[in-house]
Length: 511
Ligand SMILES: Cc1cc2nc3c(=O)[nH]c(=O)nc-3n(C[C@H](O)[C@H](O)[C@H](O)COP(=O)(O)OP(=O)(O)OC[C@H]3O[C@@H](n4cnc5c(N)ncnc54)[C@H](O)[C@@H]3O)c2cc1C
Image 1 (tube, rainbow, N blue to C red):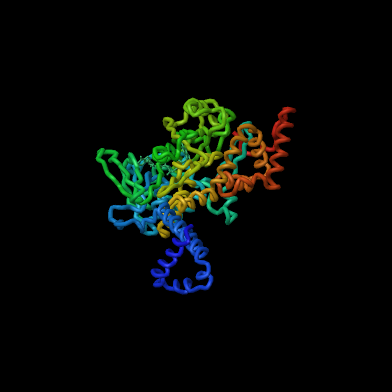
Image 2 (cartoon, rainbow, N blue to C red; image 1 turned 90 degrees about the horizontal axis):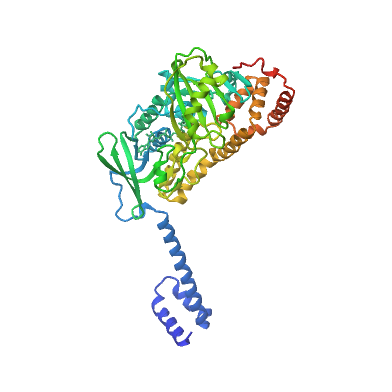
């Protein structure tokens, strides 16, 4: 570097920088006076470093969509904090908890309540807790719209069965003092949850079908194009955050590129009236040809039954076999046909898809995906209502924090994914492995039924708690469980080889 240029630069700095507080002190410094070149180079390097850091911060801020910093952006009346596509259990729960914290929420629902949703209607413990918090459980019980399961059990692929009163056992233990399952028809349940969200202040727009959602990065706003489901009139909503809660087809998440697969399972439903042959509240049947899926009969309020057949991926039964299998089991399965009796008064089969096991990424800038749209159905049990409601609540909590921090970026909303993964996402992984294991080794279910038969209702209650997600599936590894199931497997093998009768289930209720 030309020393003349350096000297004139130093002289320029001396003339112009002395007004900066503290600058004169640096210039007067003995080292700086004696080594102007070293001091100059150091100053330039420090300057470059500072500029780079500032640029980084600015870039970071841009990326984080700090909407408070967007010029000319005010809280206009018509801009929602959150627009949620779908007002099923996931969307309405999210709407309830966001509205409770004063957030402006639009629930966009293509149907008009009361609307049916094909389902087994079995509402498990964690959903019951949220329903209590929302005040919905009281309404359901007061209006006699739900039926708490008292006695139930399962029939294994080989026909071993145990049916006991798990609710009685649970009531004795404060930890389980909730009842594993309450059956509530979705035509009632979903309307009650949506109305609770509305009462809390969420705007419920029924008959509103979302067609397209587009995000504008410059404003940090979503524009959601809808049309009236009945009158076809177009309506547009604008919101800072979009929530996809539109069920297992995941239409919006697929349109936006977050999901690129079809739902991976399917389930049928048929209500049965005036049945006199089934005296229980809930029984799960595991026909070999359906594994890892299963059939179930669940008692609803007012003595109606709900018959279901779940096709869960990984086995021989394919989604297209559902219609045939649903009817075949009613007519020919020795246990199911006996349970339903001759000529059951059963409605025409209805069916809907299942998306099981959770999607890989459920968040992005100004976006989260909840409930069935995010694949939150347990791959072992086919249950999804409680995960829909939990993800709605977790989603609302994550968004409330993000709004408080004025940061709706993907970095900020990752907390939603972390929270649901910790709460039930890892369990889904275990369930997936277990369901494939049971398909390969159905003898495990035969052995488990025998063990429950020996240990009684208390053990059945623990089994029910695991199957409904209250207890982790690591329960099977407990020293008082795993090794005993293993022993029963040896016993079962022995009986099969020597064609012996299983006397341990003689006292159990069997079909
Ligand atoms: C036959 C069957 C049996 C089942 N049995 C059980 C059971 O016994 N227990 C259990 O826990 N789970 C069960 N499940 C799973 C359970 O039904 C789901 O997990 C649950 O409904 C998920 O709730 P959700 O709010 O995420 O989605 P949904 O309940 O599917 O709600 C989605 C909502 O989005 C609306 N929507 C869709 N597209 C649009 C659009 N473009 N614009 C506006 N609105 C839109 C729909 O009208 C709907 O109201 C079963 C599923 C099936 C198919």
